Every structure is written in structure tokens, then in C-alpha cells.
Image (cartoon, rainbow, N blue to C red; front, side, top):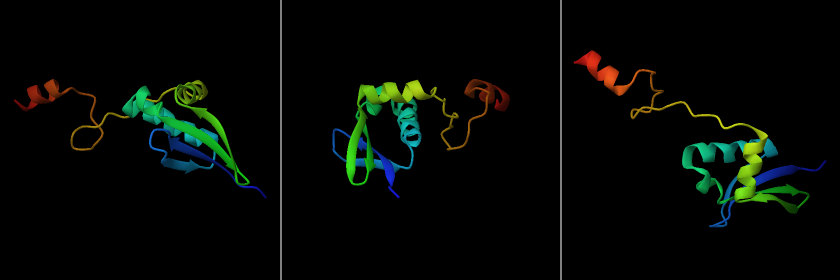
Length: 100
């Protein structure tokens, strides 16, 4: 039985970002990177498939981001307030006016 894994690499530093059981799991990380850090940060990544000791590059840089975005839509992260909890739907101004 062969083991297949997918690896995300930082192409600028040459460091392994992470290993994943499926290509979709790795592409999900790329999409989350686009949302949280911007497209430019995600374009520093490369995706490879490892099987039986052989590595095949799937996509690198902008092509990887395009692949990730083509396979699923971006999901907006839940807003986080400065205390690390999910933010409520009311605005800071509304909260201030209620307290004042």
C-alpha cells in the first residue's frame, strides 16, 4: 500500500509549512492564508505531492493561489474582537452609546 501526502512549502525560505493527507486539505490552508494574510503571502507557497519517495510539484505561487480559489470559494473568518472572542454584530459605536 502506497502512502500519498501533500506538502506545502514556503518557496522563499525553503521551509516545510505542513503535510496533509489530501490535496483539498492543503488547498484549504492556502485559501485561509489568502483570507488572513492576503494573496501576496499565499503566493509564497508551493504545493507538492509525495508518493513512494517521489515528489511532484502541483503548483507554485500565483498558480497555486488560482488553483485553491478555483476549487472552493473564500470563506470569511468570523470577526474576532481584541479580547480574542467572536465579535458581536453591533458596532463599537453602538456599544459605546449603550454604556454612556
